[in-house]
Image (cartoon, rainbow, N blue to C red):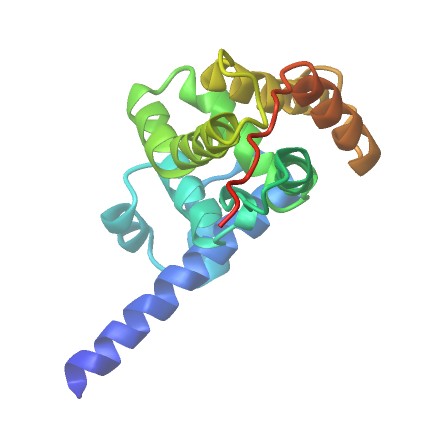
Length: 200
């Protein structure tokens, strides 16, 4: 029983620290977040935070991952345009979220100067979404929805790339209408001929 209580307190402390890190980033921006401020906000000790997370970047990355964003989940209804439009709309909303957006873009910037953070960012956040997108595009190609010679990896990069360009470079977060035009135009240029279903 004592062990269970200790585990519960530890889990509650971790959640409080993750929530405090997200709130701090939302208020002051990624660069101004400090472990000291997060510790005060969470009512935790600095050493507790450093025992679980080696750096501010890793702490904030885990905070984002802990939210369990559904932008990693790709629907497969058999209509690749509709499915990718739905998923890219969720991704665009995640990027423009006042809670997740500042952390995500801060992590992307910090990763340029921190190899360990870059590797962990790709492993825990970016990589799974990239692989899920490629898998969904591959399924569409195999069903004939996309051309047989389509490059799924390149298409995935084009799908996400414009969202990041809009959000990071020109600071005009993509709207739902924009995402619909983007996906329809891009996938329409790679359309294949759906295979006829066999009659039983």
